[in-house]
Amino acid sequence: MRARRLARHHLVKPAPRTRLVELVREVGGVHAQVMSAAELALSARLRGLTREHVSRALWKERSLVKTWTLRGTLHLHPADELGLWLAARRAAVGDWYFANEVRPKEAKQILAALSGALDGRCLTRDELVAAVTPHVSGWAREHIGSGWGTVLGPAALNGTLVHGPPQGTRVTFVRPDQWLGVVQQEWQPQAALAEVLRRYLAAFGPATHREFAQWVAGSQFKAKDAEALLGSIAGELVEVDVEGREAWLLAGDAKRPASPEGIRLIPEYDAYVMGFRERRHLFSPEAVARTKAHGKGRLEGPGALSWLLVGGVVAGTWSRKRAGKKVELRVESFAKLTRAQLVGLEREAARVAACFGLEPQLIVR
Image (cartoon, rainbow, N blue to C red; front, side, top):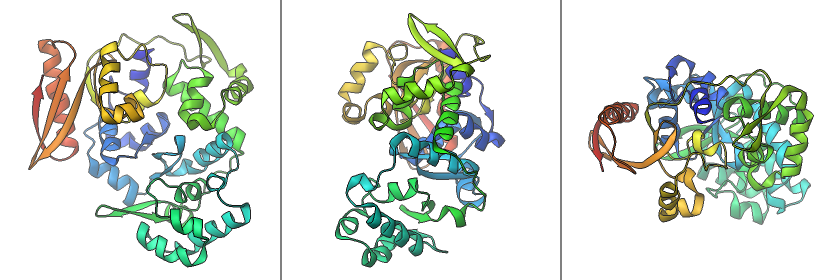
């Protein structure tokens, strides 16, 4: 299972960087709550990729889009598939209006105000708040500027806005119908969710309906509904045994890959960790202890940490810190690394530094 996921995520043999958009499509989106982590996750899967390549795809070519989708968090998706991911999320979480804080009529007023403010414009969060505040209720005025996306997240789910090119450290927003310039396929929500399930099984399978439910919407998507969705495409699936546990793959997609090899550095919120919740095959007791000892790990779980992978198994942690024209990489391995693994680690350090246009400074403990 580890070998399969490593291969499907191009963590064994990275793809050419010209396949950036297709790779994002294949892995079901890239977590982008922390943009530097998204850039590193992509550089681990695409040869020679730098943050400039990602920026160009987002803000110049507009072939990628950044918005709130999976689990209500920011992700990168192919621009021509925005409609698919929004429809799938609506199917998973249902018709909801700003955490049920306002009535449908008032929600429509908020969406109309946001759409009007962004008509032909790219606005920072503060500019958008100033433009919309006179036209919305007290609750919306209070929450529209929240970095948690309390108002803007539901508006993104509705298709009203997506992220635009940043202005320094400030985020901006644009209207997707005007910004992307591509006609979105109209998806019926349940059909979209079924298609996303197929994508998930291709990238992360073998998997269960519970793992899919957690991946797509967290606690908002009930396991029984995910089980019913799995049943709706049962004719396309094959059941497999994973150490006594029932799981599923797409039929005809059960070829066993070669054993996982090599050493990789993956950033926080990497899809290899975020894609599933039953992680006993991936995390040793020491890795679990490291997670619990880490401030963000205690709150968010193992996805919040950057991990050293050896043969697809978590074998240590790492951190990065810029120092002038260098990036200091501190790696703490759970066990002594072999000479060949240290050579591989040096290559990984060079790749991480190159992603940001810096020189590596590797420290191994």
